[in-house]
Figure 1 (cartoon, rainbow, N blue to C red):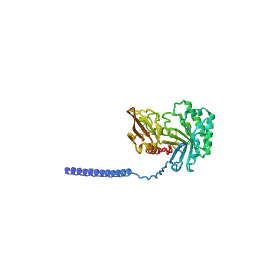
Figure 2 (cartoon, helix red, strand yellow):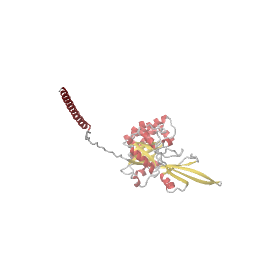
Figure 3 (cartoon, one colour):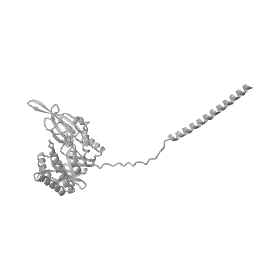
Length: 378
């Protein structure tokens, strides 16, 4: 009897344990489902509608200008309609002010005839002779007379602006930079009072060769800084590109570095890049060292002489990948004393294709103003 009671007790206890375990498991399962459901809700990504950003793209207000030299004035204005601005290059100095016997002064009226009412015109004061430059910079009275004459000429001939092109290429003392700065500030200040726009023309290698222009003080005084992005390789130097687009390691400097230097001190909307539509032809020895100064050739002359049909011996024409410009190598011969002498020649030049490469890059940098040297060259 006792055995039966013990067995029944054990069975009851077992049933109770099993029931309790089932109850606990059921609660765990329910809790787990709740947790999982909560996790799914909390992890579900929330889609929050953000207001759309309005993106406005501003097109660069491009300005295309051209220099018209006094020796190459157009008789027909049709070809000039594509330009926003015409620079007349220009008038120069004398001991008593503006040189009124110079051809640039005498052709002034011919230039004004080709300017249309929609075009801006700029009168360039060309100061290229270093002896004359020093004479002017050493005389305050002469400076005042030159400025007075220049402003009068600009107003009489309905120019909208004046430009200073003062070029010193030799070594100079620090005092020259100070004198140029003083002359420039006086010129630009008086021109602005006369309601004329002001431009300063400088070398493309201003920073590379440390030219005597203090752009920190002069830039705020002018409406435009025009950079001559050509003539990096000089006629009296070794052959090379007019101004290489790339190739700082190979050539010592390049177009992109030049622009980078200028935008540090000149606002982009004040910056105009001038492309030189010409090249140089060097006579060189077998090591490609120049044996005499190079000869300047306009792009039109290069096209006629080489690109349309190159008749010279071993004429090789190739575009340089780094600079973007074109190099031509050819040989001439001369019979002397029954012996044939060979002469080696190298030509480098800027053309429409190399300009496009540089201009497209300028637009990417936010620089929209370009000019060309010069009318009649291309």
